[in-house]
Length: 175
Image (cartoon, rainbow, N blue to C red; front, side):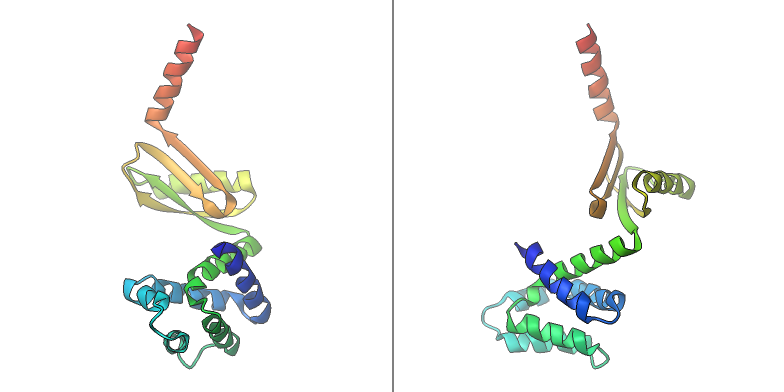
């Protein structure tokens, strides 16, 4: 439900904004700020009036903020939807990625791949999807590789344990 509401607000903001990329970057910074527990508690608190919450967000934007973005934040505050800023930011980022055909993904593995291997994997995914993909490496306890590009709906998992189980199943079926 939150995603549907965020899409409507993101569509309105992107149509009213002159520079969607800079607006999205400002919303990304606000999302990071809202991620802190104290600010999230303030935004969801029924005790604090909506006007005070809106003033807090506008103060974080500063005086240099685009007027469309300021008005957007005021509308979110009036409708008690300031807690939707992270979801709106995700939707705007997804739209920007789709427009530029450049996507970011995550590669999880127990050991770090070198730059050449990572580049080959990005190129292979790029050929498969027709998009430019940049992978970010994360260390995990997985015995294998897991690549996911959420905005494209891609998830590839190579696990030694899984290959071993499939090989055993294949041998059992062939006997």
